[in-house]
Amino acid sequence: EIKIMSTKMIMSRPAIILFGDSITQQGFSAAANSGWVGLLSNAYTRRADVLNRGYSGYNTRHAVNLLPTVFAKEMNPKSTLFVTVFFGANDASLPGEREHNQHVPIEEYEQNLRTIVTDIGHKLKETPIILITPPPLDEHAWDKYCREEFDDLSPRSNEQSKLYGERVKLVAKEMGCSLVDSFSLLGG
Image 1 (cartoon, helix red, strand yellow):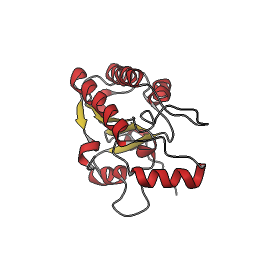
Image 2: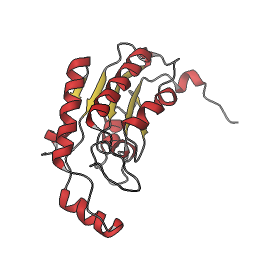
Image 3: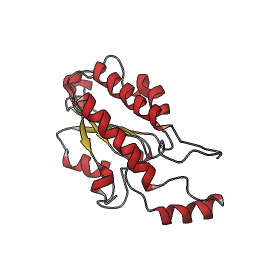
Image 4: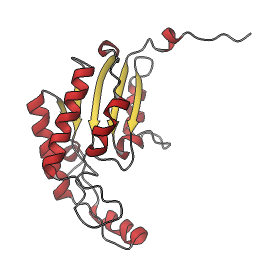
């Protein structure tokens, strides 16, 4: 005999929603203790469901367009512990003529963050929103990878990531969000 669990039973735990780019999408890692999303999920085992809404290759311009899909109007703010917003690594790529240019000008990036926070805030009233700065990168390793894969230098730099991170800090302070400064925490 097969018993089917009720939807109410399945949905009884609060959610943690992680919204971001590939750093979020790939945050569930197969290797032990290496993916930040996996570590967070483990820390909240049996207490909350971690919903990974990471989109590889996306920037904040894409994220603004995804808002109606990721954050539905009928969401219950009481069932969400917190939301993270972790975009910027792609936005901060250097401008240029490349096939998959992910760059978003810094002023637009800042405005997109405000739009994202405002939209989430309207749908999930009083749910804490945590903004995360773009992390530092190993410029030498990125250049090597890009030369091997694309016959070009990397379109990313720590200087650019840091500048975009400063805008995240500004928006977090201005809009009353918590902040994780991954750039500084990871040695940038």
